[in-house]
Image (tube, rainbow, N blue to C red):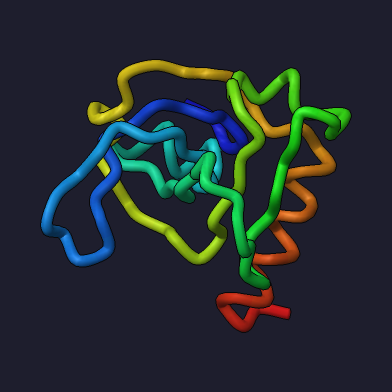
Amino acid sequence: MNRGDIVLIKYPFTDYSSEAVRPALVISSDAHSATNPDAIFIYISSVIENPRPPDIVIGRNHPEFSRSGLKKDSVIKCDKIATLSKALATRRLGEAGPEIMGLINTKLSEILGLA
């Protein structure tokens, strides 16, 4: 599992009341993922109405959409971050391209105050 991979994974609701299998983007480094049973993920949703500032909308018209493996226009929820067991991932869908990962890096820096 590598940084930028998009996988299907059992992702918890923010109140931990339940979980659902959803696409998610791996944001932990390759070195971290290689040495740990867990990885760090960002939630992806196909509900794109009213995107918020931390969100990145990726539509079918985006030049990197085809490599994502996503079936619908989607939103990457950059503030929905979770450390989860890699064993919860059921399969790899695709990957985020360099443009999308650049946007992710910028959003994460803003959200975490690293900028």
